Image 1: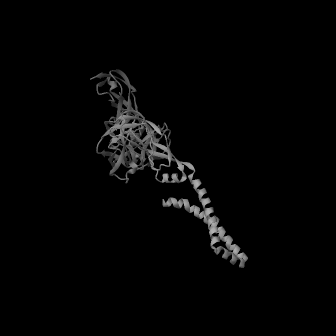
Image 2 (image 1 turned 90 degrees about the vertical axis):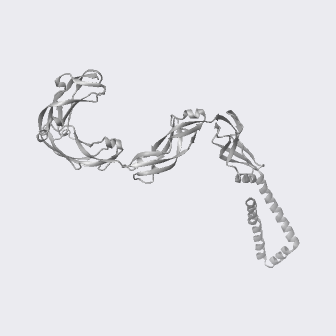
Length: 448
């Protein structure tokens, strides 16, 4: 109240002092200094009681007029809008679910400036919707604003709302954990495992809401892990959210609504050889006599499954039409599932020699990718073994035997019957070109 009085009357006092008292005082001083002896007479006049009485009366009338005008301006009605006030709903939260409530409302206050000032200082941050005693169904209810100043009128927008009350039901759902920002981890790190107390949670809401829920997830942000080193880290208070088929959040109650997740980071690695693989064919009169690289092996980092299936890292060089020795600077590509390499590039040197050919007989043909419910047999002796032509540098091909060559037929997707299948050949030395002299063989596939 003291603050209010100061806010109202101090401006009035300052106005009177500045606009009335000070100018009148200056006027009397100027008159006194200008007329000398007459000024002394003027002072005697002012010293008389009647003069002071009339002067006081005059000033009182002036002050009354000023104050009266100020009061009129304060008593004029005006309006203030309090935006985005929250809604407090009174109902049995354990038994019911309410739909149709707006998130926020606006409140318009109408009254004098003085009353509005007081009302805004004590304004409530919320309005009230009382649903106590209402049963499941659709109801139209009033939005009430609780305020103590009876001189203020108010209007709530919206003033009435239509709500639907449902019986609350609950179901047990399976919780899953999704990891966010995996790319933020150091390239040598992988998430080895995540541990949490329970994978069963309770979802509560209306029956229609629960039908929308297809997944309940804890979204673990890996940027919250304090260190970029292998180890186990506890991330506390991970919020749980329910999602529908479109990935939108469903507004239901989840018990518990947060969990703690232990994230274990590991840095699995494996040392594997680098295998340089020529692509294309060198000029017709040449063959590759040697391939050397600045590095022959490297350490790879990735998930355990990728490491288990990785026996070498391939590095491809284009030798198509090559006629002279050449040195390549090659960027090593990461195999699938590999996050980091200890070496990112190497230098490869290719030397050429004169081309020679050699024939290797009796290379056995092996079937691959045949379903376990079938067996296969060649329909002639030539369908079980082939001869292979080697093309390469003389010193290289001289040491190659049938044991260094693999001939095979790919029977993926084949079923019972007789087929003519293409023969493919490969060798252990990638400086040599391998060609089967038999292009196709006839085989018979039978059920076991």
